[in-house]
Amino acid sequence: MNPMSICSSSSSSSSTKSWVVHGLVVGAAVAAAIGAHTYFYFRRSRRFRSRVIGIIPARFASSRFEGKPLVDILGKPMIQRTYERAKLASMLDQVVVATDDNKIAECCRGFGADVIMTAESCRNGAERCSEALQKLNKKYDIVVNIQGDEPLIEPEIIDGIVKALQSAPDAVFSTAVTPLKPGDAFDTNRVKCVVDNLGYAIYFSRGLIPYNKSGQVNPDFPYLLHLGIQSYDAEFLKIYPDLPPTPLQLEEDLEQLKVLENGYKLKVIKVEHEAHGVDVPEDVEKIERFMREKNLS
Ligand SMILES: *[C@@H]1O[C@H](CO)[C@@H](O)[C@H](O)[C@H]1NC(C)=O
Image (cartoon, rainbow, N blue to C red; front, side, top):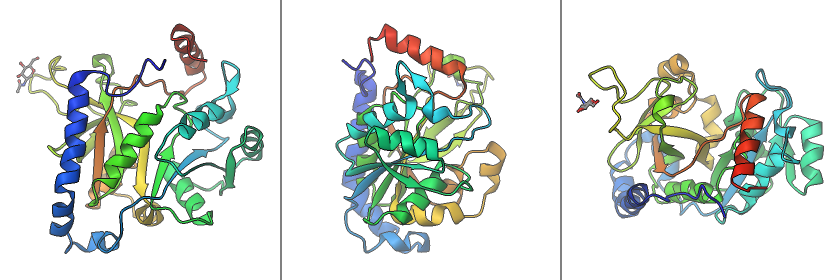
């Protein structure tokens, strides 16, 4: 039914599994080894991170696409599609929309979503998630930031990044990558990622990484494309927006580099996912065409 299910190719499925297994086996040892580091102070005596919330941050104003969350995609607002996908994830105890806009709030309540109003001044989705988390009555250990511009996000990917974070107690952040299409190698809107042997992020870049000595794309190298979905340790999310900007983050304009530059660990899972992000109005037609072809409604 879902043609883009994750881990469909045998090679990526086995590597995803091996990362998860590695995470489970070495997690405790790693956590013990890093106990001395002050920046992990809040992780030391904490229990398993079991309580998980999905937050869909949505703002009305956008430089490239005004009112984007409400755009109609084959008869449903885009944010409703994202919400319905998120509700299918088995690892989420609750899903809420966090917005600064009354029209979005009204629309979401209309299809049954819980809505948290957040400030217009939030500079990005993580900040909006952080504010929403602090306005919630219930306590959570992990927050998944589900960006509303990927309406075809698979629930399995949401579950995958939650499990990855849970099995890596030394990590405060997790995200997903998928094989990069060679044509996207030099597209600066497509963010690339390199990871270590245990599946922790080494670096993210808008440039092609690694960069082959020949100066050309190596058709044999499994380059990784970063997907716009992430989960955070809830304690970390409270301090994350206030961490001062870092040089690499500012140079690449990539928020997640601040995590790495401050010495935190970020867990990455590999999934099979054909990205259909809606960034500009022209993308709506593309995603509708894709959905018709695949018989998705
Ligand atoms: C660069 O890419 C080529 C294929 O285009 C590959 O044969 C080679 O091993 C790669 N690495 C280096 C260091 O050249």
